[in-house]
Image (cartoon, rainbow, N blue to C red):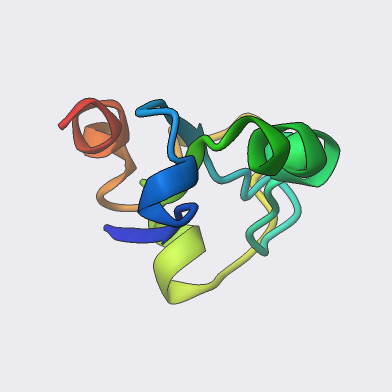
Length: 84
């Protein structure tokens, strides 16, 4: 697991953390929520964390758009990783 994050200066912080499961459907990590919401999150003083919960996000690999054998080794635990 890997967590990327950003937070505002303490005096501007709202106390809210927005956690985003980074999308690996294309075989590379993407942060669509951050892409569309960054301006508002920053303006509101919210912190943001992008979470790499899947093997492809951390180790690299093939696109996972198709449904097949259940995914990469370790992905069986990705929901637990994100929840923790």
